[in-house]
Length: 310
Ligand SMILES: [Zn+2]
Image 1 (cartoon, rainbow, N blue to C red):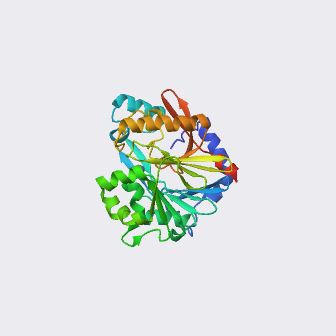
Image 2: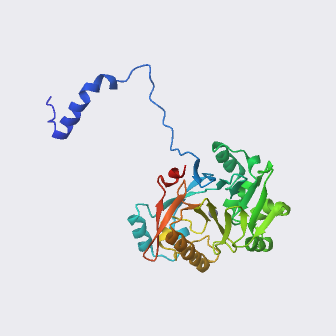
Image 3: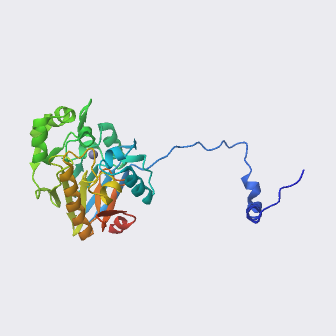
């Protein structure tokens, strides 16, 4: 038997490993550690002036053939090239569902509720809140992944809450109806306040019209002690495709031209003012900035900026 010649590289590793070799021997009393599966903490909390803002992961799922959702009017070549330039595959994406809860010091305000009660109450529990602590539920728009958590088989999820939503959005769905709206939102209308763009939902929380994704889709601006954060909901639903190419048509945008115009206006403002934002479908924890580039925007996820607010 001949020994294989050591390369310089394997010789280095062999030498480095030698002093530790006895400790690396498996011991009979220890089983191999279990594989745990991929994981992620379901909440992320930071301060914004006198507010505490917590983003909640109320679900995540993979999506095949994302061009059919995010690039309806792009060529397959363009879609593939932009994806590759941003180190993401073109044939698969990952979607996130991220309600946000804001403690203003006076009220606990929840923005959107995920797909189902179990998901939002689970994420709230991880963040240290119970559903009956929620004072206000703000519904940015009436799609099922935003209203699904407000009620279920066990009844209403947030027993002590009042509700706020945009009047244009509400009026549209009151006429058109959809399954979630009819079963979950309509029964709560007596406890609902309807707002227009510019209205204050609570001190430091202002509604902003962001129509297009749905007829009366609303975004919100938070401001406390001079610090701002926008909650853009579904104004952009992918951090690369919808921000770098705001004109790329998105399957779920009900008025595609209006949605594109909203993206340019809203993110143009956030880029100019360097204001961070939470995007409901951005990669969790869903907080970032935008910089104007070419005919769109570059998404810059927050790193530690919000931790410095403490
Ligand atoms: Zn959505």
